[in-house]
Length: 262
Image (cartoon, helix red, strand yellow):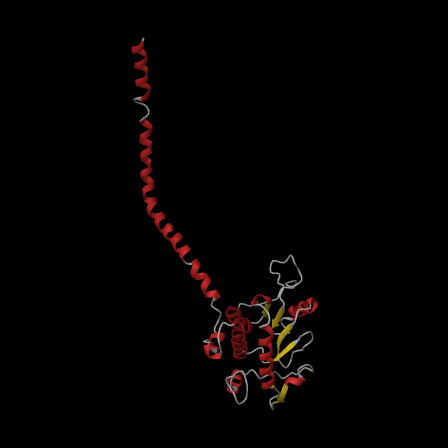
């Protein structure tokens, strides 16, 4: 642990700065036990100790599965961005954006997945993933804010699942825990990624146009060369002179040969 006194996964200041504990003005009955207090402005505050404890439990549970058996579903921009970095570092499966109905139930679907455990970032936006996981008996871990319901969720991680910094910190912690469990790093000191890395936009989109750029350049060069050949086209009238070539010699030479033989 980096904070020995509080025995937290990260220093308390990091949690507070990321706003991982800040909920909404709505509190469901399911999330009541994870609430620390209600502020004067009406916002509910989550208990950091429970958030930290559940993050640690989530890391331990996912570490029991092979990376390809773990599926992370992230439908929102901030969650999908941080989750993409997490998937890149740990090798787990990832579905960004809308979860297509039948992803885990329709065998004929091209994007069919059959995970052993599912991690959801937002129970509201990823309800279909929760339903299919429950129907298939697949264990489910989910980030839950104060306004979420926890039905069919096996492990609740109480956290601000909407903020960019909060989500970056969540996947920062989970990536570090999983990489230690996978043996990719020997300890926290060897984890060389900071929060900024998980906040940055995923680089996959930037790499695609780079590979495509050289192709239009070659075609453009060919197009530029084409107009240079056009001025030579009027010169092609010279083949007309070749039409007079067959008239003089070929038939005339063959006739005298026959007469000499006679």
